[in-house]
Image (cartoon, rainbow, N blue to C red):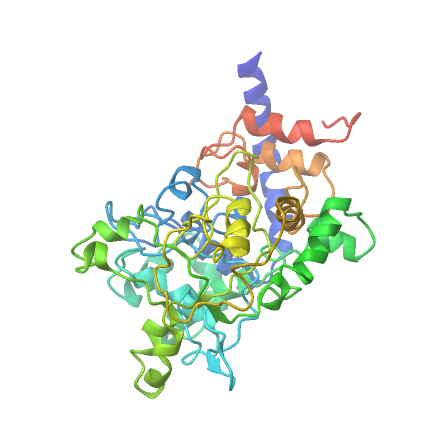
Length: 435
């Protein structure tokens, strides 16, 4: 019976693949379509095997999608075995409004990466510059040059689309960055379909705990000072006093980190120190990192999935990091020393006086910022047979294979199988019959 079921599902996938693919593509512009192809292309690394999506999984809000890695060092391995970056993967979603890195008279705002080094000063778009970076980073996708990346794209199965979008061979690499940025700005990546969004529209109701959490978020807890709606970030930089993550593998890469365990992540200040005209601002910004979006901060494929928080992934749950914000400066709280003690934010966090119940309420509110409801794979605000169809169409496909859809891998194991079907089926409204 099981083999017959799998065969039937595979047959359905073959019959409907073209129709469904055309429908999905119709939701994206050509530029966004190209960006998506580039984002999920595992051939754009040396050696091949690592796509942008390898560190920015849709199922967890476009950040790190491996629970085991998140539970430890939280830094992902690059294309070359044994090479790791030095920070946790930030979300690739809800970042498109970040302006060009600039001093606004009181603080630094804009740019991309945790330290702001994708400034936007070259392309006028920090997100596009960020998209170009990992391809050439030896600790990430490890290509020797932009031309290597271009040649791989020209040899890909979407080269015709590439030629239609990127018409000037002199700006191919720029076009690659801009196309990925276009996809990362698309409604597919930034759907604004969370419970909070439906609540704003009057289409959902917050629980009492969630409502209390929202009020605390905007008031006593001071979260909204930096995490400003609708993106829940103000694109500035802050030193929260996060402790070192002793499990960070970067400490143990002498070829790339000669300082070893003595290495200190100086964040924005470290980057500014490398820019002569802005070096005067370096000392005052040591230890500061980009304020991340809180959208999808609790998005995970199943309840026990571990996500990491903070630029180095030190924190392993929302409750833990909220408790840190609340008690960092409370005597006897037991927190380790900050990695960088200078320039810590002491006015908006550290000793907030929140009760345990108030911390839990904030966590409950943060969970309302996850796009989609459980089982809503296509982001239309409901769970129905169309969501089950997404799993059926990708049934049997493995990561990297044509037809693999990361949305369908709801029980993440790199293959779409009966467990994914069962998970979505359980989320369907009672009485729903799908054919």
